[in-house]
Image (cartoon, rainbow, N blue to C red; front, top):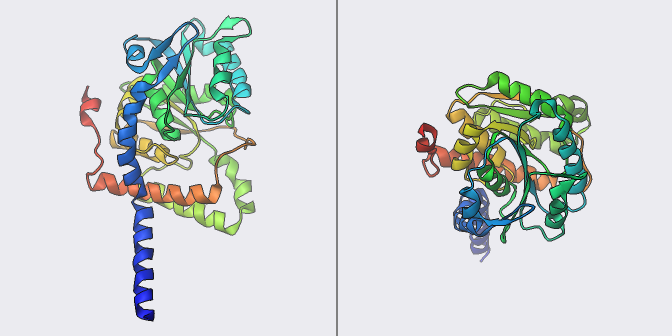
Length: 319
């Protein structure tokens, strides 16, 4: 009797562990069905609302796009938009050049979408702003992917809705991308690693372990030789955007590592740029749970590409 209980417990334990480990794959399979719901999304501008297909046919052309994924951000997005729009309205590098702001509302349950739409006009001036709404939550990676594929900028910035990264750092990130860009390819990645020296010493022991394991997986196993892959402040060239987000599979928190792996695969120039960053109240992230889940996802991303379950789309690159 006791032996039977042990075997049952062992079986349940192994099954639960395997289910947890392979969860990214099963989630991806499920999300592949959900991606069709993006075609039912609505893109709102000041004067008109478009379907996904209608918007893709517009052939917009901008010098710069800013993509902001947002989920339940009613308490923070207004401040962030004020700061960012004001910055780009006065940014000398864009004088006389068109830019757009794309907010992707990831099925928020609050007034994120309504607040974002109030910025169609800012300080008496029209803003070329779009708000994307759809009916099924995709996760941050899915929201970023949607916005990136809708963007039309020669350069596109991915930035978090909480405004944690100081937008005044954009200038040096942009200049770094211009410096490394080759064959219209390149990624400039905002990095907080220079801010960690003091905070690392104050971290609790378990957080040091989690950080060490995650960094080992990212740098050694996934081959992404960066100190900070998770900062939500990344700038891409248009061609890079089309390639990377045409391949991307993961739609949850660990998608950053996958898109950088894709960049490495195609030998794209990638550079880290130190940025100023501060923790903003109202985070939806459980640090321990997210760290364990992301470490698992990092491993699975590498494994699924190695096994050929996930494939790089070389036809996109060649085109």
